[in-house]
Image (cartoon, rainbow, N blue to C red; front, top):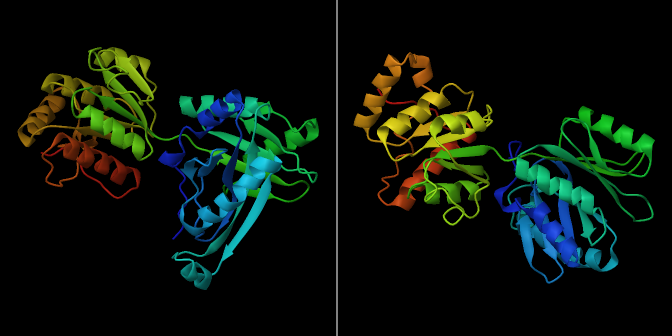
Length: 359
């Protein structure tokens, strides 16, 4: 079974572009490894990245195991030489078994140098786009002499960086729109690796109380972009949610007016009271959001269901709400409750769970 993912980057790879910027500004060096081609059930993962710093520390992953170990052996020579490498890995089922793995297939990994003054504008743009939750494309051109050109293709077709050849730039921009499988590695008429960088899905956490803290932490660990919303600044603040992608101090109506919630987003409702929960759910039902989950006892759920009916929401609307929120794991502590909530969100994300607001 393939390990590739199409709906977001691996959580352990988030922030790599920002870290590359820090490395370049500080005058340090590193090597960045990414898949350039994946065939079959290869042990590398689409959307993955592995950064090896000059001091030997690492950030991210390309799937772990034997393949990652081999890449880490070769990465120091890229740091030292300043020249990129393309490594081909081909594993039959027998080869995979001997390496202690269960999958075969093949993949090509590109290892490229990260140095001050080299493609800094590209990584700065990539870090900004990742923070903003925008999808984009990274293109790496590998001329025969070993130098490297890099550019980013933004959602509207705008390009940051260049191959220093206008015709090649335009050809790459057009090629980007024709690619159906990622990552893509072309050998002719030039060696080029085209990698799609997909933003993580957004999880909006309404309510910044005690349960929200572990919910935000766990959701971020499993690959969500986290946004915390509460009208109380003493709860919704950077001290309590230091790693959240966004913190919004606002009431329900103002929050929904300010936030651009799309069909791929998730909403968790864990506010401090029944009436606030109801207001969030009612507002959420007016959006195309993929998931709405509300905390509460079955008695509370029944009561809110009735009030939503009275407000004009039909059964089809109400069926969109997951309540009581969370997979039943017998949770008792705050952390266990948070785990059950995030587990349900992940199950919905992966298409393995369907449930609705209890009657």
